[in-house]
Image: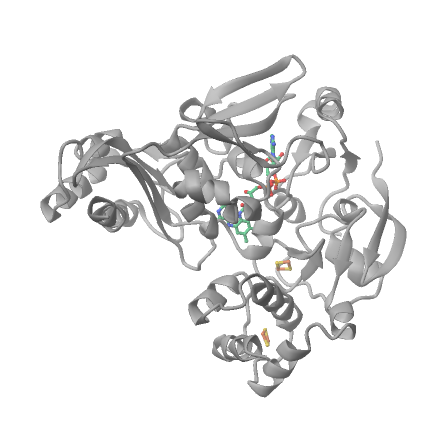
Length: 155
Length: 285
Ligand SMILES: Cc1cc2nc3c(=O)[nH]c(=O)nc-3n(C[C@H](O)[C@H](O)[C@H](O)COP(=O)(O)OP(=O)(O)OC[C@H]3O[C@@H](n4cnc5c(N)ncnc54)[C@H](O)[C@@H]3O)c2cc1C
Ligand code: FES
Ligand code: FES
């Protein structure tokens, strides 16, 4: 039985094929094999949300998937979604409202907020808080992040 | 790398799964959504020799209207149940529980069957399954069998799924006329495992309660159906006095664990608080 796995997937729109160890997490694959270090690694057991990436159209914890599970998937990271401009309104709002300090949580916050605005464009503050509940920020105290998402919602 | 080395098999059929489980015995683990398993691998709390990924096995995902029940395939992701019109219409208890199961990114990957098979004592879905009288379908090489929720949960992280077997689906009875469901939990942070929670499924007729179930999670080593406390409801209308009687009975009936979040006395107290908050609106509405 194989401890190495061949995978083929699309990352930020480009096809990628690699042989990886079965135990390699998706976020480590993105960071170490592909050099996409915008997805961060915090707790490594699903609690903090720093590793959030988009897999087949939906956010996922990069630390709770092995890369082997992403075979055939369409993966987008903060790098690709910045290039496409999809996160423009959210990013501008984060800057305007000072919704980041160290920035460690920010890629995960942006991807999570983008999914919220797509699924529930009319979300109010309470709903924004609930949807972001799985993403820790140790700097801002969250208020400014909720402000920014609320601001981007209207744009 | 965090986890110890393991091999990985991407199963296409249930037979592939059974073959690996038979060959490797205890060394093999089923990988569903991975939202509990990969976390324990990262922390090296478990070190299986091989993971069998059931994510692509045909026929394991989806919610189906099966007459008196909804049949929920084991690989159905939490988000599918959360947003399902069938679940909202026929199993309001599940619909109100889903937003409390972890966080959005985890609900996008984690599966209904994974939650039931993992059987965390503080998890929402096992308690809902017991409250609603769900039936679990378990398949193995020799065929499949069905187990009632009451006998499915056997202890801490322990279920009726035996060696070489896989949970394939859960049949959840649709809510019947005259029944109401209520769900509530107390957690430190929305989406985290509950300190304690309640899945209630009761008959209400003209403002009076009939039979039903009060099933607590985070209150023992498995979902705890408080039958003596629920019996106090029968024939009664909601009142503060009734709430107090049930809260007192729960202090006798429940034997919760202690952890960093709460000691046993606090959990017993919160159980009574949850009953009041959950049942009062059911009696009224
Ligand atoms: C930060 C965080 C918070 C969470 N909060 C909650 C919460 O509040 N409530 C809650 O209920 N859950 C919570 N979870 C867990 C989440 O709901 C998981 O999705 C779920 O427990 C397991 O489902 P899975 O599909 O991810 O299973 P996996 O992680 O793939 O598997 C879990 C276990 O079940 C076994 N298994 C899985 N599917 C089957 C099957 N079909 N047949 C036989 N065995 C099987 C596996 O072998 C493994 O041992 C949380 C997780 C995290 C990381
Ligand atoms: S690093 Fe993945 S959730 Fe914290
Ligand atoms: S800005 Fe520092 S963790 Fe959020």
